[in-house]
Image 1 (tube, one colour):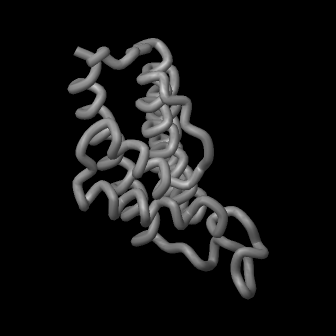
Image 2 (cartoon, rainbow, N blue to C red; image 1 turned 135 degrees about the vertical axis):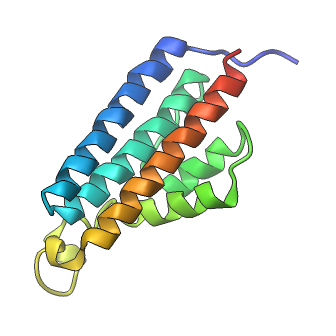
Length: 139
């Protein structure tokens, strides 16, 4: 069986942006911009997962973390905790940003400190898992 094509530079390019998005999530949570912190944490996970898949020449399309998690499972095991994090984070892609995603009020009133803390923790877990998978396939 052929070894997978590994593009470490492409992985690192995406992974660096995942770190920046997660740093942004933390800053926004500290500034009590909890909806934006949740969205930034979702973006961090999305960038990390896509980075791994791009680094393996798989060129993923789309923004749904649940679907991206399914593609990730083709690379290696995705533990239940990571799959749960991907599902939770996926819910922040649209409602955290758009006023018409909720019956009333701006998105920010629908998010609090517990939401952003959970999203940041989920993002950290996804990034750590992506890094572990990368170490396993890039040897």
